[in-house]
Length: 168
Image (cartoon, rainbow, N blue to C red; front, side, top):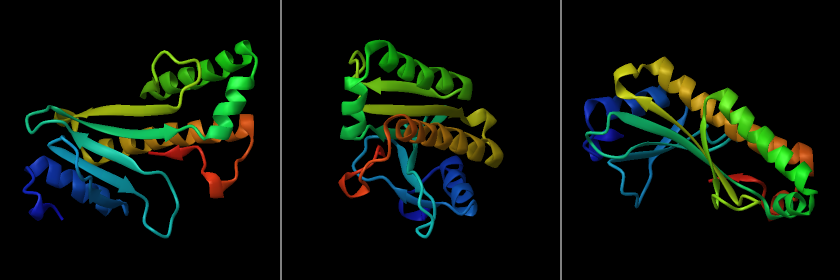
């Protein structure tokens, strides 16, 4: 896979390790990063999509990330909740991300109701092993699943034909 992208040895190893773990890997198109791949479970297994990126060739780290877009029905229910209940729910998410040691950003940043939640975890090259890569991937994935399942538990399941709190 990497021969067409002319990758450095470490990035080539990242691709190989993820594929060796049974994950599907494809190069993300039209991004400014030196290295950016989309990683997902095999086609027969549904699950979230994450990105692994290295901003520049000389960056000392990779970033494993997952975005969760809040479904309009969940967003509407969050907006209609009493302010203390809404804030309590969002703080519970934030505290759980801290406990999981995952960086997060609510988008838009100062909005009372986020439209999107970005979850990230950097992984520095000097500590990069196959195990560290996979553990970081799982940590970010689990934070994303926690977000989706928390929304569904709090505000109910949504019509999947019209979209779900989803992974971007």
